[in-house]
Amino acid sequence: MRIRPAYFTPGIHILIWALLLLIPFFVFRNVPNNTGLPGQFFFITNIYHIGLFYLNAYFLYPKLFTYKRWWIYIPVLIALINLTYYIKVYFLKLFYPDLIINSINHRIIFFPTIGFLIASIIFRVILDRLNREKLEKERKAERLASELKFLRSQISPHFLFNMMTNMVSLARQKSDLLEPSLLKLSDLLRYMLYESGEEKFQVSKEIIYLKNYIELQQLRFGEDVNLRFEIQDGNADCYIEPMLLIPFVENAFKHGIGIVDKPFIKIKLEIKEQHLFFSVINNYSTRGSSKDKSSGIGLANVKNRLNLLYPKKYKLLIDDDGSIYTVKLNLELTC
Image (cartoon, rainbow, N blue to C red; front, side, top):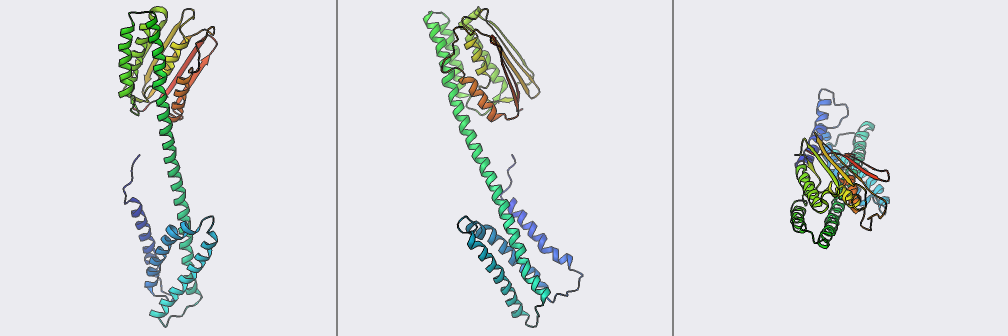
């Protein structure tokens, strides 16, 4: 988002007022002065009107036009309009004692003040609306940042819970795979602690993370599961939210292994231009389901993060026919 210089808004104000002050010189340059008013009158009173404009826009309206003081604001404006009229007449009589205030001059002296005050009210209303919208956007951004921070804080405990369950299982079996599994887990934890704190990083890093996670799971399950992982990273330099894809793979391993007959997990990741296509398919059994209180935390988390970070930029399809669970994600990336 482009940041405007500090002098941008004042510069716009000065330009607009300069044009307004110059208009009478061009409009009435060759027109006979039939009003009887001196030429300096229009320039000086317009300077005065500009002062009234900002006095009302930045002081009177914000201070008085409130729920409790609005009844004071209207009499103050009426008094200001009348006071301005008499001030103009006073100085005209003082410097031009022969000047006669007729009906035409009366309107020229009286009504412009009302126009400038109305314009200042409209300006203030628009300015307040823009400020409210800006404040709401800032609050929304703060809520988004807080919610994302909370969601990210859930990832590590959930991931560690699943990994520790795997390590306990290997320890009970006194498996020789425990040591390499712990080393692989160490690499994953290093990634989580030192890299996933970034807002976004290259898809190539997420791919490496997925490979490491799958290798860790293969150390535990070996050939007990028919696993196929296919990658077509046409543009892996695009950026993605960290640890966004892993919950789908976690879910497949958690529910697609066990008493399932001939378990299989098919994972496919493809990147075309700025779109990521990711799918995870696994079979499962409803008998002796391993679901517990923590089940679904990862998927709920990633859905919330998609809604927050990629609104209208993703499509997530989840299909469950009772024996095969399918997840398909189409995500628009930042490159």
